Amino acid sequence: MSAQQLKSSQRSPLLYSASGVMQNFWKYRIGDDSSNNGKKKLKLRGKELQSVPQEIFDLRELQVLEMSPKWESCLNYRMGTVPQEIGQLSALTVLNLDTNELRDIPPEIGALKNLETLTLSNNQLICLPVEIEKLQKLQSLHLANNNFLEIPGQVCQLRRLTFLDACDNKIKFIPHSVCNLKSLETMLLYFNALQSLPDSICSLTKLRTLWLGNNSLRSLPIQFGHLINLDWGSSPSSANFEGNPLESPPPKVCSGGPEEISRFFAM
Image 1 (cartoon, rainbow, N blue to C red):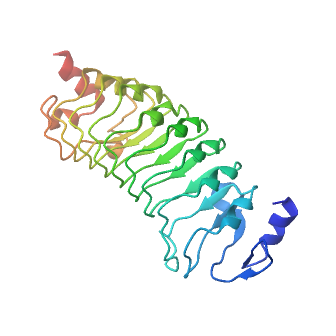
Image 2 (cartoon, rainbow, N blue to C red):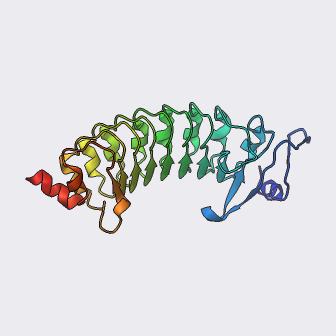
Image 3 (cartoon, one colour):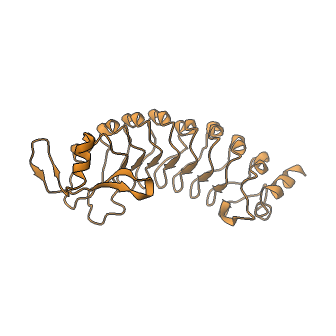
């Protein structure tokens, strides 16, 4: 779609199909998204929507796409799959697909090389395509409330990632390669099934927020005190261990922050 067509589409509440027939069973609005630096945004809505309109994938200048019914009470349709054509929207920087019924993500998502935020929470995912690791501009990834048994290894190749939410899954395992996430500042892992943490997590020294509550952790890595930016003093919520049967160190020591944890392991 040309820039003129995109501009024209902002004035129309309805979409016309390629044949020129007006499709009045769904509505859309393309506008400037104030929360994303004025980027071109489309929020899909439609009370009688039965499938994803293919015309969306002709909007090649689109930068923000919301296909989530979470905030739209009028949207009844929930996607079971993401159309392969998603890879055509190469200008996308934000893609929201949360609160659908997704069981998999197509490998074509790897073509979205400009993507900075990807929201996949509240679906039925158990894995991600290997092509995810091609999203090297990705900074924020939301995977909460799915069926993951581990943090996918390809996620650990996203070296610009600063925010990772994998809460409320069934995660038992964090790969050693998590050490590649050197830019990570927030990692949310509460309500999972973690029994241990890899030593390599202690190299993520930019971490400011780490939520580990409601897992099955009995111990922390000996070098855990190296995570000095987890500052309990200025932000009590920067780390959360509640709901774990911790023994080494015990909860009382953990509440003292990284310095107390370091002293415990130095004894």
